[in-house]
Image 1 (cartoon, rainbow, N blue to C red):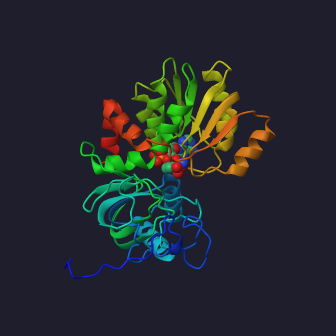
Image 2: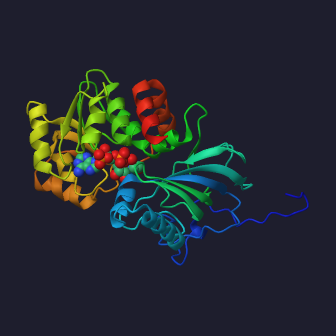
Image 3: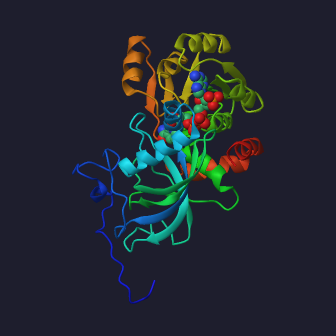
Length: 352
Ligand code: NAP
C-alpha cells in the first residue's frame, strides 16, 4: 500500500458484536446472520482462506440432506455461507475451523498476547459458527474427510484463538487434527491410571487421538466402538487399542451388553462419545459404571436427551459437555502426532 493512503477500520470490538446483523445484543455465534464485509475492525485479523474443515456432525448432516451429491453439497455450503455470513449449520448448530494466510492485522489486535503478522499461515481454533466468512469460490469438496477447499476471506475477532501452522506437519493433517484438538486434551485431564476407557465412534479423527492419549496413562485399557468395516479394520491395526467392538452407537442396549461382556460386568470408568450422528447419548451413559465419567464431545449431542436419559435409567454418572477448548490443546494434539508414528501415518494416509 502507498504510504500516503489512509487505511480505514471499523472501531475495535473484542467480541465482534458489531458484526451481528439485525439482532443487537446477541453474540456472533447466537446470531442468525453476521456481516463478513470489509474493512476489518481495529482489533480484527483478516485471513485469506484456503480450506474449511466442516465439523463432522455438520458435514454428515449436509451430505445426507444432499444425498451425497458433491455438486449439491457445494451449492448447499455456498448458499449457507452467503445467507448467514458464516459456516453455521442451523440443524447441528456446529461449524468447524479453517486454515489460511493472514493478510491484514488491525492496529489494535492483541499481538503481545497472540503474536501474529501478515503472511503467517494459521488455523482458527474458534468455531466457524461464529467466524465471519465470505466464499468467492469453492475449489473442491473432499466428502470423505469433511474438507472444503475455497477462495474467500474470514475475520477473526480479538477474542479469537488460532494456531500458527507447524512446519513439520502438512497443512491438511494439521487442519484435521486441530479441528478436534479439544478431545485428546480433555482426555488427558479425565483419564486416571488403570481406567477402562470406552470410545464410541473411536475410528474417526478424534476417536483415535483420544484412544492414543488414554493409553499413555499406565494400566489403562482402551475399548473402541465403531460400526463400519472400514473403521473397525482401521482400529484393529492400532496397537494402542486393546479391544474393538462393533456396535451401532444409537443402539444403547447393544452397547451396554457388549461393554458388560468386555469388562466382566464392571463397565467403563470413562466413556468418550465422538460419534458424528444424533441419538447416541444413551449408549454412552449405559456403557459407564455408576459414578464414572461420560464425556460428550459429539456436536450431535442433545443436552436434554443426555440429562433426562441418565436420570431415566438411574445412572449416577458425571456428564461432561465436550468443550472443544482447553489451554494448550493445539500443541498437545500436534505433539501426539509427532510422538506416535502410527497416528501420524494414519492421519497422513487419510487426511493429506
Ligand atoms: P469423524 O472423524 O467423522 O469420526 C466419527 C466416527 O463415528 C467415525 O469413525 C464414524 O464411523 C463413527 N460412526 C458413525 N456412525 C456410527 C454409528 N452408527 N455407530 C458407531 N460409530 C459410528 O468425526 P470427528 O471429526 O472425530 O468428530 C467427532 C464428533 O466430534 C463429531 O460429532 C463432531 O461434530 C464433534 N466435534 C466436536 C467438537 C467440540 O468442540 N466439542 C469439535 C470438533 C468436532 P464411519 O466413518 O465408519 O461412519
